[in-house]
Amino acid sequence: MDNKQLLKIAEDARKYSHSPYSNFKVGAALLTKSGKVYTGCNVECASFGGTNCAERTAIFKAISEGDNEIDKIAIASDNSEKNEPTYPCGICRQVILEFGIDIKIVTGYSKGDIYECTIKDLVPNYFAGSDFREIK
Image (cartoon, rainbow, N blue to C red; front, side, top):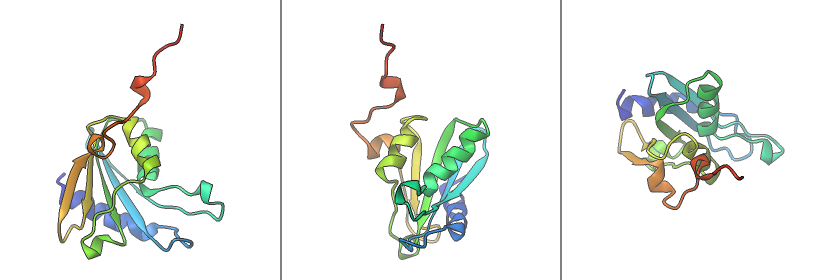
């Protein structure tokens, strides 16, 4: 699946956003190495700590179905139609890192400019689960 198609799916997922506090709708579409796509949207809660981002929603859906080899994730927001990229927040970046440093991040607009980088590009001095060693 190419980036334009995946970004269009993320744009469609944005429609389901529950964002009454920020009024900022975000959708994500995650492609696993098995070829399956999982979508997510942001879901806000009055207790802001209970809010979940679109990226993590898509990741948790994939992982909960046993599909944990992530190839790339596309992110679309209300800024997409302005041709402005939307990148993952810090928490989402850390969650993405759990599943690989070479996962591709795709953002932009399916009818405009599309940007791609890796999660390692967004978090150059990362730490991940692979950094933990057994303590004896």
